[in-house]
Image 1 (spheres, helix red, strand yellow):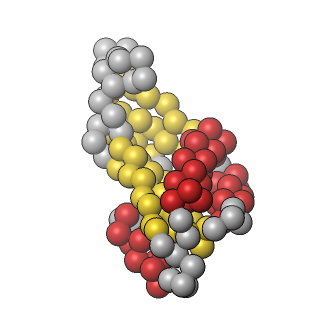
Image 2 (cartoon, helix red, strand yellow):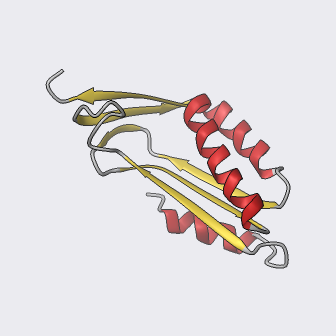
Image 3 (tube, one colour):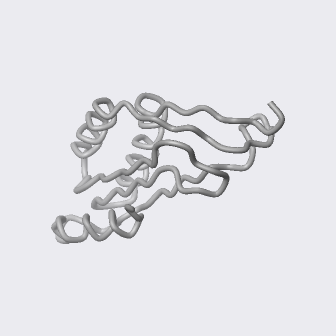
Length: 121
């Protein structure tokens, strides 16, 4: 099983620390409620791998970025389970933090397919 630390260590082995001053991480987990506040039992998650890979290639070419890695747990995820890891390495926070957010938003919108099972529905 892939861990967030696995992704960080992979990046640390591959980047040039003359160009990297920051590594930021995202660890998305299955929430116990929907965005509307309804209790959830689980999420079913799938991915369009071609779109996923294309987004990562694009994000890696952003100014100041040395590496972007991401991992998605597909299938059924229960409340509290890890769902998505993203790690971005780059020069300065003004470059790195926006790329983390942009990568997260694009992956969720364009590549991830999920459905929630609400409790009692």
